Length: 402
Image 1 (cartoon, rainbow, N blue to C red):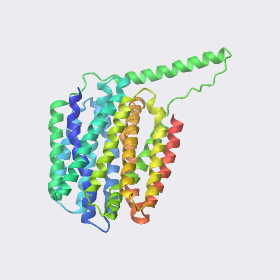
Image 2: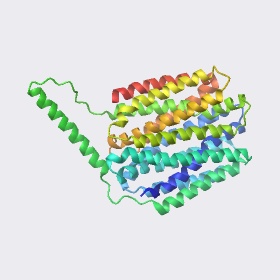
Image 3: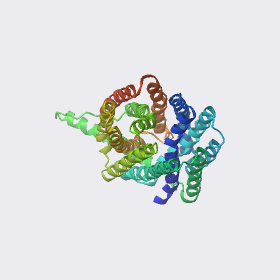
Image 4: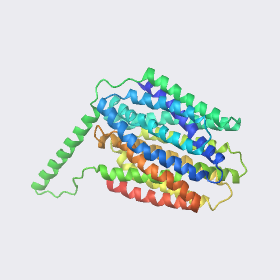
């Protein structure tokens, strides 16, 4: 059953390579205003991906076909990344990347539903953790590939050919290995179970009160709205922080007179931290783990952002400190993603499977523009302070949700 994930592995390899390469490529084309163009590119793509995520989630649940949308996503990525090689115009790259973003998210909601329907509810956290950890290894290998290609002096066109080829491999493997579930019922059962559990607790508390027994427990139903606010705020802070992060790391590396290829190596270690986080989340998964740890993970990310502020005041060993912080950030993000994905499958009804990606995408889109803009106008200290403030507000939202 696990073989169906292989296509996603190669897909993430391609996007791991593209994630750092594209930012550095745009800065090399437009050295003076590269951060501005990165912000425009990321923000436009992510804003367009928001309605697209909702659409793909609705369509896949409506038709009860999931494989076809995964194949569409991978095939479109293959073609569009090939077209990238035909131009060096920043504005044309932005337009192509916007279309790529719309087609790329076509696989996200179907993938989440596949995991939810192929595995029982009590195995959701472990299954999401395994999937995310497995594909994160692909992302890490893509970053390593970027480091190797940069070190060897491979040109931009050939690097984009590699990205396109990896997505073609993903398409072929998914065509051969993915099968739609025969029956779609697991999420429906979980919804019924949660409703009955809520009613049962209500009756129990009512009977205790009628018997004159003092009751300290409150009957509280989980709020999708508060959960959504927390997701948007967390993704906003993360996007503000990480959209210009390759440029920040590049500046730190250059200040230490180290080769630029080290930027890829540092993000490889960040990805390695995420893999460790997925493994840890999967080994400790339980029904209540997500709710208990969400707010702590958000606060921990805020603390790590505060450490980045301190790094700006330290010239010596800055590369080492930044690398360590990014490793821990990857670890915390991985655990957060596993818990929120599992919770979203419980809270979000069928037909709205794309809502999780919509909420995360909304924060990411706003942050993708704000991060580079703040960095360009006010410097990276302002970026870190802004992200830290939003992480603290997100922490409050998840505390209320819990």
